[in-house]
Length: 532
Image (cartoon, rainbow, N blue to C red; front, top):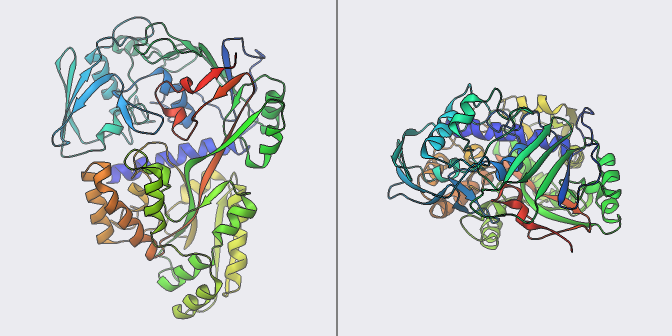
């Protein structure tokens, strides 16, 4: 379980680092590409983040994943609904989730025309497991793999130390496997650098990379899936959101990810622009640590839960571009196992405390504690979280709880998550995999302090989660929901909102079925077309 806890922590750090840039808090060392408007067959994507290397094994940031998703394949890929589909493996089977057999494509080739071999895949798996060669992914790549064997030229067999249904995600290119040629990888001076770039078997190849400026890609000639319509793609790194909006207005970028909510109207007003919001599978909520007095008192925790006006925050601060959360895990995270509508129905029934100051007063009275002072810290790149903290502080003041709301640097906030010193804290999490239990794997690990950010201990929750990990995702949904219910009934967590993100595009392109899985899915440029 520790391995998965570290996995969650790493994802939290990388996702929030991207969110820092997306919120306009990036440093000013990034510039736009000077190449101007894209060519007729080139789509230009404006990104407010940047990367120092293309190699996900070294730097597992979300931008690296967007690029890697169309350059390096795994044994498995995901579709636009987050479900696993064939990648380099045409098919696979397992009877006990401990022994897995993968049947490889015979027509898969790297962008230099050389065939993908079983040896390349084994080498790439071994590289992912190596902390020296892969500090970005090794910390969460499965440590339960006992052997990976080549049965014949088109068959691989993985033997695990027990039943691990979630292994299917680990060997995908939204997990930790990005297959490169063994011979090329061993001879490259620095994989992912501007000199060596990347070598993969996906639909695109990288043609140029200038850190802090741009990445250019073009369709490769040998992809087994055929030639994509969008032949050329360029990611431009633009630190300042006002500058990015100006580039969009001038036609220098065609598509923009993560535009600020407060700027969405300005983007919409650009001639020919389209702006759409979508659930991004992010969770924002309070963590109440029962190892810190007086939050060891369940009535204090429930009083805080009742005092959090989540609907008011969503309506006034987030301008309606979020959903009041009834649980930790957003419904879209369940899409690979059950329908989103079914997930919404299940999550609506999970114990949660709707804003009610009368009930907050009742709970605080039952707590039988003296009025007290506490502090809520929030990361400087999440100003809406700071505003939500002030809303809560106003409510808690009516109970006799004096809250000091304090902004701190993002990196400091990250290091202090779950440190056992804060009775009340924010949890911000953006899921990147399609596993229904991704967020819960950390937040609902009931083993005890240090295993979850609330530092709670609950044997029943720990048992439920152990079962969730031992069965296929669809078979573990009931126990996963029950674990949510038990933790939230004790008010270890107070869900506040599930987030949304916004994208914008100009009238040179059309975008279809864009959602939180799109940029991680197989051949995601298929959802973009040039307008004739």
